Amino acid sequence: MLFFEKMPKRSRSTGPWNAIMAGLGVHGHAAEALSVFSRMQQEGVNPDHVTFVSLLAACSHAGLVDQGRSFFDMMRITYGIIPIAKHYACMVDMLGRVGQLQEAFDFIHNMPIKPDSAVWGALLGACRIHGNVEMGKVVSQNLFELDPENVGYYVLMSNMYAKVGKWDGVDEVRSLVRHQNLQKTPGWSSIEVKRSVNVFTVATRQNPTLNTKRSRQSCRICWPK
Image (cartoon, rainbow, N blue to C red):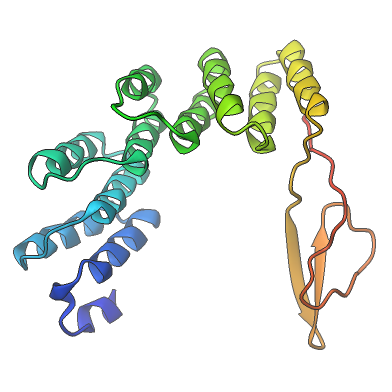
């Protein structure tokens, strides 16, 4: 924030404003992000579509639903900015985080553009948080059609079934993954020792020194037990 305050001629571009609002919003400082937006308006800088992505994301992280709706309307009515998929995904995420799942679902169906995987993915994440398996199943079907090779959606849906003890659902999702021969990209960590970078995955049993190359070990999907 200090660097932003000392920037010369920042009022000529939306870039610095968007960057500071995004950073504040991600770290839970929504009030500060909204305050920066007010200053941006006062200094005569017109917001762009990135500005409203930052604002909507900030509102989403802080649960500021009414403010988020207001910014969504402002973007279209006041500034004539046509919302794109990122804006809709932020709105769905915002509604989903506070448990307004049905409203988020209806919002998607009323979108003037076709929802992409980010939009449906935001709702699937909300279904997981709030334990709505039935809606999650509907949402996941849309995701499987849009992005059939993204195994993360399958794992998420399987975990949702397991959490409520619906083991038939877990088996069904497992079968889908096996049928499509999907694999989950392994998480990995690295450590530098004597100028050599060692990379470790979940399945690593020794210390491979790989310099700049990642480990190519196979990975199994971690299903719930």
